[in-house]
Image (cartoon, rainbow, N blue to C red; front, side, top):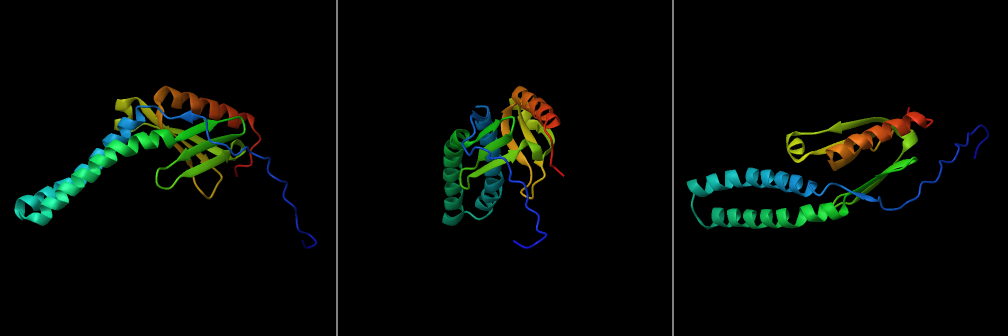
Length: 171
């Protein structure tokens, strides 16, 4: 320590624990539909090649793509549903996401800058929404995907009220 160095006040301790809430069960359907769209994007050119150049290699790639895509659609959405969690307290926003790379984020309420909700076409169809909590962090926004649309609206309301009542350092 050198003369003139300023000590920062220590941040209040936030408990490190898994978030309590799961996303909506309908999120599994959303993830399956998105996975199916990706599978179709891969299959269409392969089927075109299969029609134009019949042979063992194009047939094998189509079969492998179908098998891997089907396995993904059956395994990953339920796994994501079990893993993806969120919680908001009067002190922080907690999220846990990811199936290959698991990401655990804790954003102090005092660092929250904005709260947004988003509902794309598939989300509207399934009555789901995404809540994005923008913070004063280099890591970026915290996103909670797959929430019931009413739960998302209530979460945005509660977060807005909580952040408004909390002294902020979100500069």
